[in-house]
Image 1 (cartoon, helix red, strand yellow):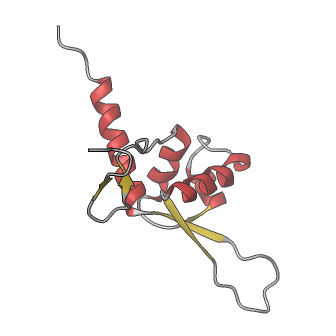
Image 2 (image 1 turned 180 degrees about the vertical axis):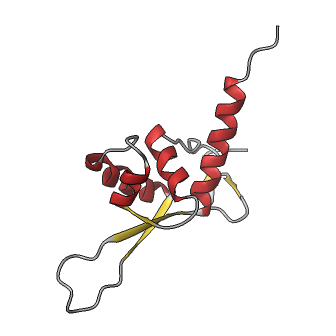
Amino acid sequence: MSTNSQTTSIPNSRRFRSDDAPPRLSGKEAVVLELLHDGEQYGLEIVRLSEGRLKRGTVYTTLNRMQQKGYVQSRSEEKPAHVPGIPRRLFRATPYGLRVLAAHELATKFLLQEAPA
């Protein structure tokens, strides 16, 4: 059986080939998903809520990368036509992103346990 074309079905998730690399989550991405766990936020609000863990200059790069990975989704803020400026983007964690975060937290907890004597 060739593993190059084999697919695995995961309920409520995207499909992936068995030769795909497992999802990776950087420290910044984990912070973003933790902050988006309970709902939508604007990018600068994410920076503020992070209490110094995220910087203004990197948050949008991180959010765009996370959107490409399927960890977050965004939508433009609805603005009346007479209000000038570009609409802000609201970000929210996807169910897939929250599962990746949960797996990351579980793996971290397991790895930080003391080794048996």
